[in-house]
Structure formats: C-alpha cells, structure tokens
Image 1 (cartoon, rainbow, N blue to C red):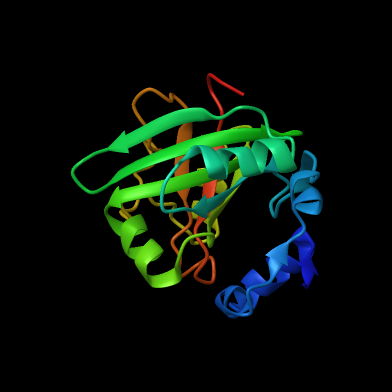
Image 2 (cartoon, one colour):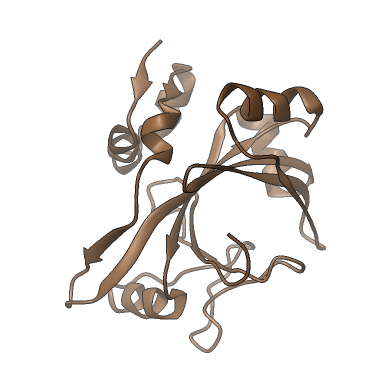
Length: 196
C-alpha cells in the first residue's frame, strides 16, 4: 500500500490528480497528515497569517460504533463530538475526533451535495481538507486581492461585510475556496471561535 505524506497530497491536489489517487485506492499516512503544526506564512503583500491543517473530512455511510471504534482504538482519537447540519439544502450528521492538534471529521450525509458525492465516490473518500486561520476576515480580504472570492457551503460568494458562514450550535466561522480555484478539492477555511 502506498503511503502519502501531506506534502504529497497537496502536490497531487495542485496537479488535479487527487481523484486519480483515490481511484488507485491509496491511503494517506495519517501520522504525517495530523502532525502538521501551526505555521506562520508570509503571504504576498507581507501579510503574516497562522495557518494549520485543522481536519481532514472523510465521507461515510453512517456514524456507527464500528467506525468510531476504528479511529478511537486504532489511531487514539479522542471520543467524538457529534454535530448535525440540517438546512433546506442539505442534512449531514458528522463528528470531530481530536488526534494530536488536529481532527478527523467523519460526515454521514442524509441529503444534499455530500450525499451525491458519497454515491459517486463511495464511503471512505476524503471529501475536504480544512485549514485553520487566526483571522478569517483578514484571510478573505487577502484572497479577494488575489482575485479569489471565498464562498459559503452553498457555493455562493460570501460578501465582504460577513465573509464567513456559521453552523447553528457550532459558532465557528467557515468559508470555502471555489473548487475551480482549488483544483477540484473542497478546501475549507476555518476560524475557531468557541471550541477546540
């Protein structure tokens, strides 16, 4: 089995080959992925922003004891925090399980775009890569200057006066890169506000 480091994963993503990687049924070396630490990056224009890999989202059929046990007992993830997203566009049950400074997110869609993704790609497929930033507004403004308007979960551009979305009961701030700018990968940007 081929093991991919996070840098290799990003390389594949940048070349739009991640779907091919999934077809080959390769796996990600989770230790390498989750041990990625906070980094201070100098973005163009001199902006310094803290960016870290926050979580990797994996799509699953259901959130049962067997799959939770796999991540908690095999990899040592902490017990999961359960969430539910239910709006007119989609319904998803999901969990976050902390591992070191990061999370594994398992998403079990009931309806909406992620359910379509599950049907097309199958269970166990990485669905998103999430980066945490210290200031989502500052990050939004920087991306806007580079010609990229971040979008909400519905794919619609976010306005400058509220450049993030929030999930009821979560209170963190979210935004996404348009997939045409992120080479087909769902890249989530997150500013944590209440829980870690």
